[in-house]
Image (cartoon, rainbow, N blue to C red; front, side, top):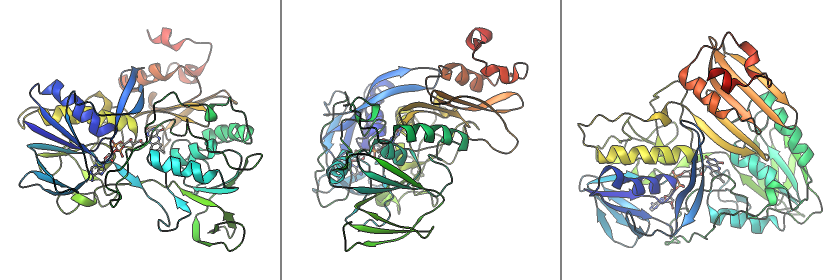
Length: 456
Ligand SMILES: Cc1cc2nc3c(=O)[nH]c(=O)nc-3n(C[C@H](O)[C@H](O)[C@H](O)COP(=O)(O)OP(=O)(O)OC[C@H]3O[C@@H](n4cnc5c(N)ncnc54)[C@H](O)[C@@H]3O)c2cc1C
């Protein structure tokens, strides 16, 4: 069986490296636009589903697959071939598309507006920031939050359309907890602090083979700002948050700054650079007339086998759109962990025959995300955002930890854990088992009760 994988990010390399586990005779080819590919290392399972791992750039070594560095510019799904920018064509029996996504950049044609996605874009940002007295960041997800934290020695304006920070991941109470710590750390110019320490991870520059194409390298991931200096030229950091507003227009400033940024709250910010971190758009352009693509998020729609509407073609990672749910406490988010989990499951599914019964594995039963926000370890489990009719228990120690459990009918459906709470494994079990904890009630969060012992 000739398997073809397009994309050298976490999803694509996980598919390519694992196909041989399920098909010993697999003949695998991986095509990617950059000379290096992403590799998952130091994988540590901290629970049934939760795991942490590093992602490094590595040179493809051909142990499990043949590697072609090139940009795919066309495909014929009937003939089962793809065409590369340099004219080469590659045929396949089964193909997995793992071409990732690109940042949704507001005002993409303005030279002073940037998005962050791959190593090159963060290097570009680092060079710009050296001369920036004032940067504006728009967006309220993980990337915007991390950038606002990592940028030093400059004036940072953070434009968010919500009333609270980091709303993609945290609620208003947790947001206040993080904001207080952010404000106490703002202006910190300490080389020993978390955000300025040098990454131990190996960083290669990723060179795109075809400069004319706008294909980017693989997405960065957790700790992406480490190893870079995101320092401006000022002597301290100042942070201002513009809540509940959006950008109306930008134009070039004829005075000291590059941009005048007009906001819906009638303010105008003068800024050297605007970093647009308002989400991503799957790189589905090439396939949109050939495969079923979601009107909502432009991802390639896959079924429970990660198969597109053309049976020999699969998709995994940021490129795909998953309309099904194995379990209420799982949802798709375009994250590293999911790119890896989907990559592994897609390899299994590709190697199976159409008649084999393939069921999504445990990782589709519970949403888990482990990240860092403003220097804190953050674990998100299940349905961590409250909804009407749910009950929430909190345990908060200012500046140290924040624990929120979301329950229905005495059963935990989700958890938000900030800081070194050491609760992830037990909470994961309680969500997966749906054990009734009504008897314990809020005392489940009593630090004097060893709940692990209790449930053992
Ligand atoms: C700054 C930043 C911070 C992030 N932080 C986190 C975080 O803290 N936690 C987390 O879980 N996730 C984080 N993410 C998201 C995470 O990095 C992505 O969800 C994940 O890496 C997606 O992997 P992927 O393999 O699907 O896509 P990608 O990594 O985008 O890989 C796509 C690959 O396809 C190649 N490609 C594209 N088009 C073509 C073509 N036509 N021909 C050949 N090759 C092509 C690209 O060059 C690339 O190698 C972050 C993302 C960014 C940008």
